[in-house]
Image (cartoon, rainbow, N blue to C red; front, side):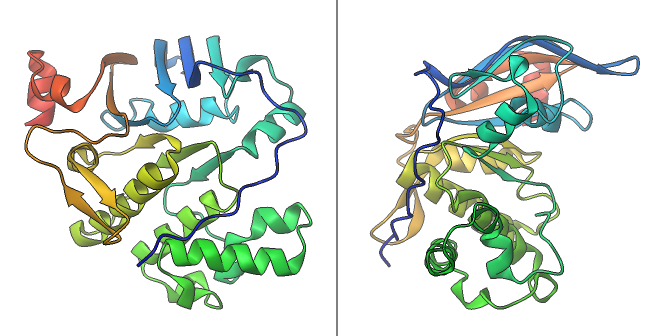
Length: 281
């Protein structure tokens, strides 16, 4: 099965200055009431890289994503996304930035009263894209996630895994420069989780989209690091033992409000840190 070519969104009116990184956090801290969630967090995401973010419940994984697009203001530090300083932007500027970022929320967050094509094409409708173009682009991204038959269905008629795939279609329809995945396999059975990871890998390897992936499943990220998507067979294939994927893939672990690890799969597997060794065992 050939991989469809997604339409590329017209350049935004305000083009950000070139940046070395797609996302950069520099000494970022945030607390809710008296609870410190992140303290002095620094890391960067290269263009085209996928970084998987781990940590126990409440460690600030989802908070990182919200900070990245200005849904939460940092108490201190600096955040740059696609060359823009998020921590210094107005709400109007943040709105423009978010048009360049695709987000897959926890539990899909689809509109129950809207059909699949309306959910997927929602942003295009808001931007007053011509109806014929919306239909073409919605069908194209639904083919990409292999769900074109759901075009006229409601979310209630879909399985949990299908809803996640629709959410991914909605996130990629504008061909974003950055994708943020918030626990895309949470609550799914292993077989369905594998399908979602394969789809995320497909987006990574075909379009080289920069991405932050919050997940509680270490095996998902290791699968992404040791497999790659094969357009000829339209499925992911295992790489030879010891070989990692061509597209940059890294791991970040949060503990006690700080980053305790930021590196690739080999560095993670060979870490001598006692907590990390227990975490990945």
